[in-house]
Each structure stands twice: as C-alpha cells, then as structure tokens.
Length: 533
Ligand code: SF4
Ligand code: SF4
Image 1 (tube, helix red, strand yellow):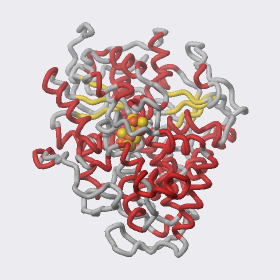
Image 2 (image 1 turned 180 degrees about the vertical axis):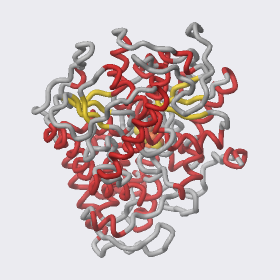
Image 3 (image 1 turned 30 degrees about the vertical axis):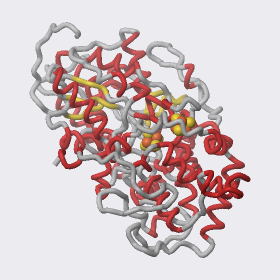
C-alpha cells in the first residue's frame, strides 16, 4: 500500500557511517549478472553468485585489483580526482536525491554516497588519510565495503540532480560511474545492465531483436499507420545513400506505450518527405554500457557511427531516448569521434543548420520537429489530443545533460490544447528522476523504484489533482517503461506517452482519410476550434 512506503524514517542510525552495514532485503537491490553475460562481454570473474549470499567469490587479489583500478582512474580522469578532493561536506546536495527522499537512508544522500568511495581514496591516496585514518573520514577497503558500494552505487540512477545544487559542481553520478567500474574489475555487476548490453553487442539492440524480427516490427507499424490514416508510409531499412540515418531506442518498436511514438515518427517522416533510412544493425540509440563502464559504453556507441559510414548518410537523427543523448553529447567525441566523415546537420525541409550538432552530427528528434513547427511546415489539428490534459516530465539526461528543455514543451503546446507544468522545483534542470534509470528498472528492485520514484509521482499528483492532468508525456524509453507501474501505484488515472505520439495524433497528413481514432485506437473526442491554454 502507498501509505506503507510513505512511512519514511529520517532519523540517523546509531552506528557510525564508517561502518559498512548493508542488508540485502528483497525489493531493494538488483540480482547479479549471469556468468554467461560476463563471459560473452569478456569481463572479469564470471561466476554464479547473488548479493544476499555471504561469500561473493571475489578473486584472490580483489583488493589490489580495486586499488590499482582506482589509481589508474585517478590518473586518467581529472574530474574523478577533483570530485573526491573538493567536497566541503556543506550538505547542499543532501536532501536532493530522490532515493534519500523516498527511503530516508542517509547513505542515499549524494554526499554520503560519494563518501563511501572517498573514504577509501583518503585512506590509500592521501597523506592525511594514511596518518589520521578514521579521524579524517578514511577507512580500509574490506569485503563489507565492497558490498556496501554495490548496494549504494546500484541505488543511484546517475541522474545528476544533486550536481545542480552543489556549489562546486561535484557530479556524484561520475563517482557512481567510477564506483561501478571498480566493482566490475572484480566481477560485481547486475544482470539488468549486462543482459541488455550483451544483447546490444550481439544484435545491435538491447532487446536482442535480430534483423529478421526488426523488419516485421517496422512493417506492422506501417500497417497500423495505414489503418488509422489510410496512408501507406514508407519505412526504408538499411538503404544506402539516404540523407539521414534515424536511430530510435529499441523499446519504440517492441514495447507499450513506446509503440505509439514509433507511429508518430513514421507519420512525420512521410509527411515531410524525409530522405531517410532505419538500420537493422544500429537499431538502438540507448547505451547500457554507460551504466557499466566507459569502455563498454564506447564499444556500444561505435555501431551507430560505423553504420552511418557504411550506409553513406549525411547525418544522424535520434529518437526519444534518454541516456543515448548523454552518451552522444558528453562522450561521443572522445569515444569514437570526431565523426568527420559526416556532414554538419542541416534540415532538408527548413534549411536550419543545427550548430549544436556540429561535432556529433546527431540531432534530437525534438529539436528537429520543433524547428519544423517554428517554420510552419506542419498542418496540425490539436483537437485530436482533446482527451489529454498533459504534463511533461523532463527526462534527466535530455534536460540536464543536453539542455533540451523548451523544445518538447513547444511541441506539446502546438499539438495539444491542455498543457500544465509541474511545480518549478521538480522540472527542467531540477527534474526528479523516474527512479528506474541507469539499469535499475529490474522487477526485483521494485520497492526501491517506487520509493525513488515517489518525488516525481508526487509532483504528478499535484497537477493531476489541481488541473485534472491525465497524461504524462516524456522523451525517454526508460521513462516510458518505468512510469506506468509507478503512476499506477502513486497516482492512478495518469497515462504515459511519448511526445511524438501526440505529434502523430495532431498531424494532418496530405490525402489522409477522416480519422476516427487516435494512435492508440481510441475513438477521437474532437472539439475542433478550441483555443490554446
Ligand atoms: S553540495 Fe557539493 S560540496 Fe556540498 S556536500 Fe554535496 S557534493 Fe559536497
Ligand atoms: S546522481 Fe541522482 S541518484 Fe545519484 S546521488 Fe545524485 S541525485 Fe541521487
């Protein structure tokens, strides 16, 4: 019951935070990665184990391996050393993490989450820590500390909300990322990260969909569009020489409610006559490697650019995905770039040059569509979205990592009559995470997901009760999967949709038949001529 999860105890524990104490209670952690996935990806120490077991079967030299790995990363990543050195423990980030708000566990405060690793850094890499030990917050690396790292670094969705409030710009997400890398060196990973990563490595997408299943999925979407609009749209796959390569998150062509976003893309591309192609190989914009290590993220990111080269396209358009944009925007150039063989993206419809994509050559679908709207290139009938009172969830990565904040709102306001933002301190750069990102969307982790998702759900509840909001729009595949159970639990009566589903509903296509349903197959409740709110 929601009331039970709302009973959060914020009183500090009696034990010192330096003592590692973790209880692997069902519902609050993710299962370990299966040995076969570790083997497939060539990772260390593949074995059968689970976090709740006493013996984690760490390799004999586990301690040296982790400390050596830490040393290497301190030398390679200046941000890592800086973030470990400069925290003044002011506490400004302490109450900003959704997992702390939802669980009351002090080790879910960003500052303390980072201290779990920083304390080992102090003990082994600083003079003060070596001499004064626990008096300066330093501690030994023990097996219990490793277990504690695993618990709390897989209770961080790498959302970066805390970094917005830190006066020094410390990004605890980056510390979590390094923590996960160090755990990987001794074979401690979760299955919900390595399963999709291994599938992506094998087939090009997280769901493991092979080319002969990808094609029929897209063909089914084409049939759905025809049924709704009477128009048979084209959906070229692996077409060499197309101007644009389009890359969605794989959930868009296999999951609900993502599917309706896919229909929206197909309708839009047809209507503007875009010269583009899908790829059966680079059929995934997401990158679960990012939740594991820089190395794996780099390996998975490479396929997008290899495919763009093979197909000879000019530039890349990316779909409604969250962390794909963090990977592309923040790391692409040093991963696999610069992508000199591609051209600087220019919209073939409006002539707009996407200056921000000069280096990556990859444009976000919301930037692309907002530009079309801004240039009056689309005919719209917003009353086809009359049944929805919409709010927008800023997905963490598009909002905080690439600053994509106004474009989705601009699109929604053009294609819907009713739009209401959630309270200011819960949106835009300060948006609250869905609680299931960075690989934590596993079923076995549901209690922690519901707790972590509570601050976001609470803001949805506010606009639901005040304005009757019944639709949460978002632009991230993980969000679209995470929100339905979260909202059903905390705010029943609010559905979830992609922004391009709403675009597809409102788009008036040349030669279309009179529409009787929306993209979900629900009868239209059109009240044409309503003014914008
Ligand atoms: S806000 Fe920044 S400096 Fe202050 S405790 Fe948090 S991470 Fe440290
Ligand atoms: S990155 Fe997000 S989940 Fe991680 S500590 Fe910061 S606020 Fe919490």
